[in-house]
Length: 480
Image (cartoon, rainbow, N blue to C red):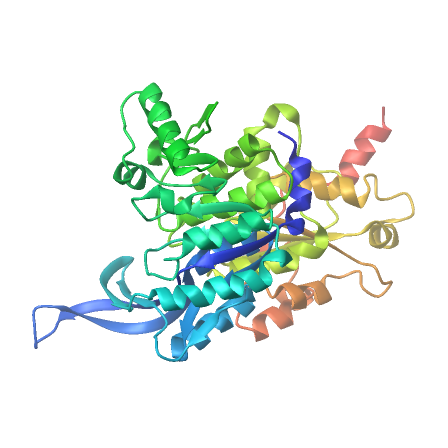
């Protein structure tokens, strides 16, 4: 598999069409039973809103650096305004149609000690009149995109999906559908559908031997006039089935934390990889890896290009290939992680010749939070700090080596200006929750510490491994 396709992710122009909603979460502790009824009393201490339904598919595409727009229906209400605000934060272009006579779909969950106490659904199914509004708008904007993903949550906004697919295919667009209807002929003309086993069986699909599954799936795609089926099979992985071939991919996760939103991640990743020019079989292979990453997270998570790069590098270890995200994209990826509630850790250094001390130090830094950002002195900065004979290894090579470590999520260079040999300005851009420095520094001596502390973060000093330093490595080499 060629990892160079990962550099083309931002070329993907995808329109997501479907049932959009707001997922609202109230978090709190439960300490007693209500005197009014035998139900727990949850003292709420946190409220969180997330883009849900088709909006979660769009979010997954945006987090993979794809250019994505979302077409759906919202009401002229608080939840509709909340969803539009969430889309802005997630770099998703809104094509939402506002209907004053219909509420925005919202699902509200009360969570206590990682357990869902109750879920409240505020929704009214959309009518064909509403679906016609989407169809009309689709006709006006279809030429702006290369791929169209239909995300059907059976809420009615896609009741005219057959006509919508016809519009997309007439415009020569690649169409992917996450189906909900038992009648898969509703999706005639689609290039790919992505049912799970339950949806496949409901549509008449037969299970049993691999041959039975393949034959049954082929009969379905032939009669429904669909190009190919990507059948997601939980712990059995995935199968890409066309009229001529069947490719199976084993599940790529060691421990499942939450399968919520895994189907959204699959179709989002598949669309982005196809749009980046990757062949279909390889695109499904990557989507399978993405699913393995996301089900290891709590809640409806997403996957970043860096996470995919790390996973692919392990998966293709024999090739020696490695993906390094473009430096300019990293700050946006960090912001996405922060929006997902992940703790951002920052450290910095030259890391000219990687040695055991560096590896242990970075592993300890990563253990302080969820994501580790490494600020890397550029070549000119190192020359000013260490002397004209340094660095031994140029920036691009140092960045590749550091980012290949399992403990490192992102690498960002700094030091372009003569008065900018500290990462203070970079720290203000990253806004880490925890700032880590190695050695015998005091907190007051650490660049950027005042900014982190002023913004409610932490600053910690870690000990270096004795006897390990780049200078010592260079001296030993020079002795030979």
